[in-house]
Image 1 (spheres, rainbow, N blue to C red):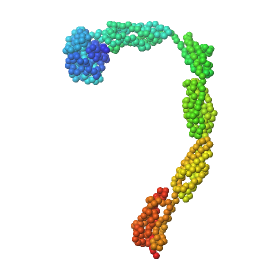
Image 2: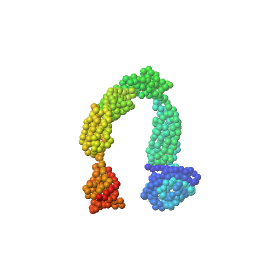
Image 3: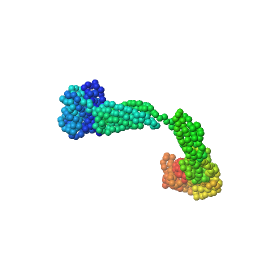
Length: 596
């Protein structure tokens, strides 16, 4: 799409600076003249010039901007090009041509009249001996590809350019029509006059009052178009109409005018219809007026309609303006309530799943009371835990609208029985292989039947049993207790039957071969052979005897061989393990008495 943008060169740097856009190739080159000040436009980026033209000294043509001018006064035209980022820019000028279209048709294959490929950010070029009516094409490239604004100004020469080739808006009229009742709208007509309109794009006429637009497509009438906008609001307020070319947005014009005042005064009132349960009154409220008259004769803004299907009319008046509104009362039957529970009785900590019957209750909501203080729930299906014994009445309320609800209760629907509290104790505190009878004290509550498991395959149904264990060990005893309601619980405890450990160590012996007290032996019960060790030392710490056999004693000789050791006091060190697994060590002395 061709974009026509005014770019102006001037003879003095003191003239105004104006921002412009630029064409992307010869066919979309923007016209400019040198009569209004410095011309500034944003440099192109990430583009390249088309293949074909003779770009003269430009070995590369990155990021091109295309323009053309027409000579109005014969003479040289000296041009200066700079940029805000002080980066490298380059240019080439072709001509002369008879028109911009002739220039593009030539392919720009001829020799340029000015060209620079220097690394400078400040470029100067001259169109020599420009003659009235000639057309020249200018290409400026942004070699650096950086963001910058390029400025052009005519710095010398007696030549001048023709500004009539640049699009301009000459005038815009806006003629509002009369207000149209009852919509309070009007139509707007007018004429847009312009010069040198772009050859492509659109001309859009819009307004600031309601967004209505009219679009004209190129090619445009030579110097003006007549427009018409419909449906603008007649409110007496200022309104602005805008005309702009899409291919040259700098070529635009605006006109502000006053819309005609409103010609129709409306005073609409509103009232909402009501949906209620059979027999439940509904509130109807009208708004939008200062006084009201209902079909019931009431003169208030709000009335209470009976809970039967009916239609109500209300007239609202404000000054001399009146309006009528209709309210319809629709009724529906109240919901029905039926519900069930999956379990109706059981022991405490009882969980019950409740379900509401939704038949015929479209859109209803459900609220539950479970019979315990503060215990509630909501929904079609709910679950509740009853932690304590009792008789519980359950209530369900179904609601299908304001004031439309039905409740039902089932008395003592849920029966919760006490769970046995099971406990027992064992005496005596120490039970061993000799005193091996355990006496059990049953302290359970809310129970009528008992079953004991003593951990050795023996059982009992007595309330306070006793049991004799035939072997040492740890026994897991479990008491099961139940009641007439079928509630059962149990508790487990550990009973230890300990072995009796007896150890006798003599303090003297007489190895004199008289067959009395010849051997130093220990006498024990409840000691394991595994891990047993007995050591004998003399008073100097020398080991005299060692054994790991609990039944082997010391005969008084070194390692039980040879002659008996001298009469003296010897030290024993005995290590052993009880049947309970407990490791022990005993150190003491034994007297070896001499023979007689």
